[in-house]
Structures are given as C-alpha cells and as structure tokens.
Image (cartoon, rainbow, N blue to C red; front, side, top):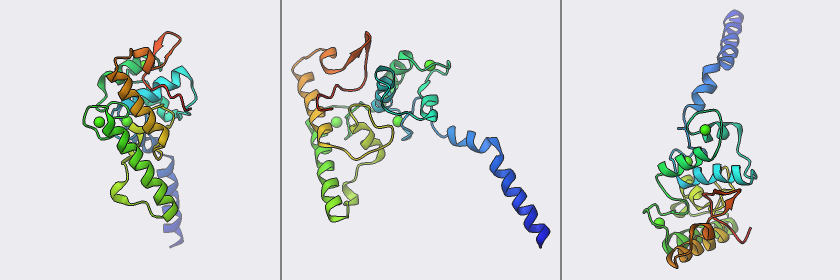
Length: 191
Ligand SMILES: [Ca+2]
Ligand SMILES: [Ca+2]
Ligand SMILES: [Ca+2]
C-alpha cells in the first residue's frame, strides 16, 4: 500500500512537470486572439494597438505571444493591421450585427445599469449579462486585458464614435494616431 502511494505520488509529480501540459494550454488560443475569448475581434487589434502606442494595458507574457500574429518573433504594427483585417466583429459592436450604431451604445449602457443594480441587490440578472466577447468588445479604449463589466464611459464613447462617423469625421479625429501609426482603439476623452 505504501509502495503504491509512493508510485502514485511520483506519477503525479512527473505529470506536473511534463512540458506538453502547459504548451497544450497555450495552443488553445489562435494567434491574434490576445484577449483569449475564442474569437478574433476588434478588441484583439485594440489591445495590441494600445500596447504599442501607450504600453499601459498590462498584457501578460502569454498574451504578448498571441499578439505576434504572423509569428515572426516581433509584436509590431504589421500584427495589428493583420488582426484588424481578420477581425470577425468590430470594436464596440457589442450586439455583433456588423454595424456600430446607437443600439450598441444603448446595449452597453443597459448592461452597465444592470451591473450596478445587480451589485446593489447582490444579484446580477444572468439573462442580461454580456458574454466575455461582448464585454471585450465594449472595452473601446483597449485598456482591459481581461473581460470587465461595461462602464457608462464606454457607452458614451461608442455613441460618440457612431455620431462622428455619421457626421463624416476623418479617421484621425476618431482614432488616435501615435508616432505616425494609425491606432485601432477609440480615443476616450473621459480617460
Ligand atoms: Ca479575441
Ligand atoms: Ca509579428
Ligand atoms: Ca452593432
């Protein structure tokens, strides 16, 4: 019995030290899926773009590996452009209908309101909860490396972007341009 236990302990320790276990976990995410929510979106482009422009969104080592979309060992604007070109949903398109409009701003605002009510009541209604993909899409500034509850600021920025695009404002007036590089997160005047 003692021998069997020792063998079991040794086996478990050996399993824990096997390198393929951790490699398998990393392989779960496709290149470019930096926020690790299972789908390539505008938020992945926003995270990498923000990292390059300001470096203030605390991407983990694993996320930086995923940010190297073309696998050339460097995270740069080429990766941002490629992720942006291949994104399935645009940043802030939280209802995922391929259009950024007032509906998205209202959805973010509603989710924010429910989250606040949920916090007060200690019970967030699950039927109104955003998925992680939606929470990530609401992160218009590309600041949050992990899914977070939507804020009122995000709703206002989303509405502002929709209004400016409708009014014909140019790219650089809506998106930041840092060191001559176009960015893929939204400028947030409330930050
Ligand atoms: Ca993603
Ligand atoms: Ca690269
Ligand atoms: Ca939409």
